[in-house]
Image (tube, rainbow, N blue to C red):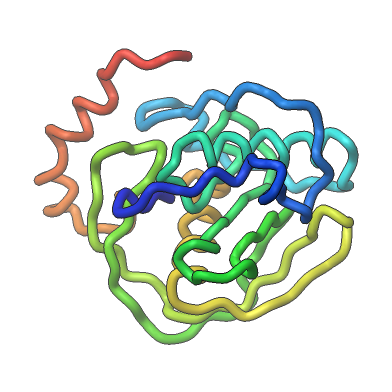
Length: 199
């Protein structure tokens, strides 16, 4: 998920190093997949165990999310990896340091309320639309330490987690808007699909 209204601060500096995951070797950002790529319509597979490979994936995806500058959420399918893993970083929106989540096998146990807000997506650049979602959710997942976690999320955090779980299920945010709205966006979607991008 993206938020083009602000630019992310550089969180790669030594002073602001992310302590939640081990710092591995510096890598190039992973290649984002864009609307029209078949992998975005596939369902990701559960992760049976958190190994070095999963920790490395978390590091690479976090690097990729920061590289976009506007990203606040990223699912593994968006970089062509069919594993049930997502990252959310809304620390700047929350103006504190409690908004970073790296979740394996996330699932929504319960939801309530209703909220409509504008969404954008790193895999569908320059296109935004209002999406209706539950306002509050209960989430269960596995963290990088292979520990089961369960927590309540609301407002922006709930929205971003739902957006990214949709990706893990092969669903895009444009699937959650009306057919009429999708029709109005059809020309823009075709341009995104036909754009010459790295593979």
